[in-house]
Image (cartoon, rainbow, N blue to C red):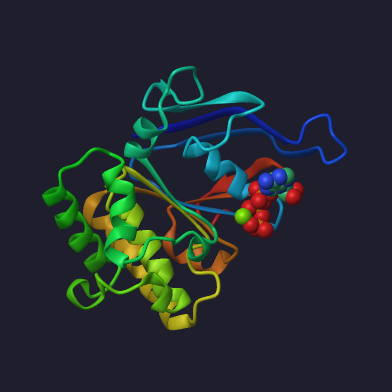
Length: 232
Ligand code: ATP
Ligand code: MG
């Protein structure tokens, strides 16, 4: 699944005193199966860009083409985008609201119209991938978990939807070194084992230099530098 971002502009609160040009003409091409590290200073537009890739924001101008489909075009449903592109938000711990971990992870896949059995299998599988014990944790409340575990639940919820492109917005922020290494290793495995295209937003050049095939550096709303970790 290839992704082409063409001249993407996003202005928050246009024509108001709070107007903010978060994306200022972004051009990017990502090939199927690539592992991309998206880095850049705070406020450079990383989260805004990944929300566009998941169809959550409407561009001021420009387009995003995923496998020949213009997802910014009229009449493209959010569900059809979500089947392809999964996004784990920057602060997923604040978005967990179901009463059990099972129901929480089921939320995404149930919206894709799968059978109960299939959802069950996917929850089991995705909890295993992120290192959560299915039997022990499925009926517990997400609120009993640590921040790192809740993050894993959020990642499992997106993995359970089996996206072809998995985007994680700062998946390791606030985790201890062990939790960080675990999660990055699991993501790396998803990439190598299933060939999923991965985009990780990160502040850590060091982590991304180790993991990514290619880095894209955002600066003031533009994708400025692209290259292998060695080149950047
Ligand atoms: P960080 O590394 O801190 O997460 P980021 O690169 O993800 O930063 P964005 O969150 O995309 O940056 O923000 C880009 C710009 O858009 C910033 O100037 C920010 O203030 C502005 N912005 C982001 N979200 C909103 C919003 N919901 N309403 C108005 N302005 C916003
Ligand atoms: Mg951000």
